[in-house]
Image (cartoon, rainbow, N blue to C red):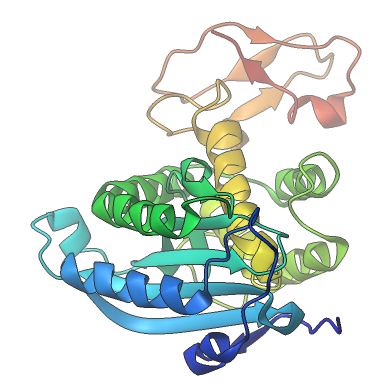
Length: 302
C-alpha cells in the first residue's frame, strides 16, 4: 500500500473509497455511514453545522471529520455570549485497523481554528467488531446529547488557563515534558511551538507569559498530527494542562495562581509567597536543588 501524507480532503473522496475485506472478525464502519449519521444526529439535535473539514491519510485508510457547530436551541447565556471559542464535533475512523472509531465534543479558537478536545472520548472508543456499526451510532448520539455540558467545561477551562502566568522558561520546561515524558508532540512540533513563542501567528487576547497563550501555541502545532493521532493527542494535551496547571496542588482551587509571586531567598532555605489572597498548605522544597531551578520545583501539598 502506498501511504499518502495526511491532507485535507472532501466528503465525496472519503465516500468513494472501497471498503476493505477483513473477514468476519472485523466489522468495517464506512466513512460514509459515519458522515451521514453525524450530520443527521447533529441537525436533529438542533445544531447548525457551520463548517465541515475532512482529512485523510494512507489512501483514506484513516479519516477524520471535524464540524464547527452551533447549538441553535441553547438557553445557556455562557454559550450564547461566547465569542472566542466555537463548538466543535470530531470523529476518527479507520479501514486498516490502526485506530478504533472515536468521537468527541471539542472547541475551536475562532481566529485560528486551533482545536481543543475534552469530551469523554476515552469512553467512546469502539473496536470494529460485532455490532460496531450500530454502536457507532449510539456513541455519536451520546456525545452529541452531552455536547453543551462538555463545551461549557471547555469554556471554563479556558478562563482557568488565562489566570495562570507562565514565564518563557516554564513554558520551555513544559514543552520538554510534552516531548520527552508525555510523548504528545514531535520534534518538528517543538520547532513550531518555539517559533510561535517567539512570534505568535495570532492574538489570543492574553499576554505571552500566559498558560492560555502556551496552550494555543501547542494546539497550533498539533494541527500537523496525522488523523490517526490528532484527537488523542489533543485530549492528552488538554488533560495534561488541566491536571498539571489547574487541578493539581500547584494551583489553588480558584485558579488565581501567579508563578511570578513565588521568590527564593539567596540561601534557598525559605520560599517567600507574597501578595496572595489564598492560603496554602505546606510547600516542600528539595534542599539539594539549585537556586535557578527551585522556583520551578515548588509543590503545594495537601
